[in-house]
Image (tube, rainbow, N blue to C red):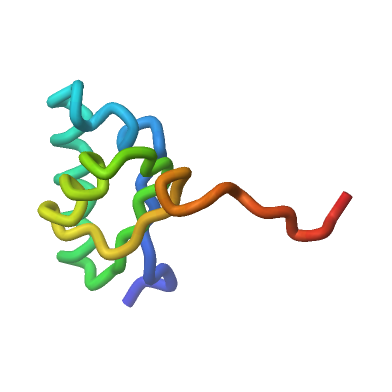
Length: 77
């Protein structure tokens, strides 16, 4: 029904979700909302295994960040 199939969660929430319960609640609510709309979820800014595991428990579909690899150039200068 919506022309959007993926929701991306900003690193500002992801980076702080372990230390800040408010951020964790926003991440959880975002994942639940996206899934209720049949959307996939990408969390950005994953830097630690602890955060990755927390996102997995919340049902996050995809992740990106320094834990997985450094950003790469597109070849555009």
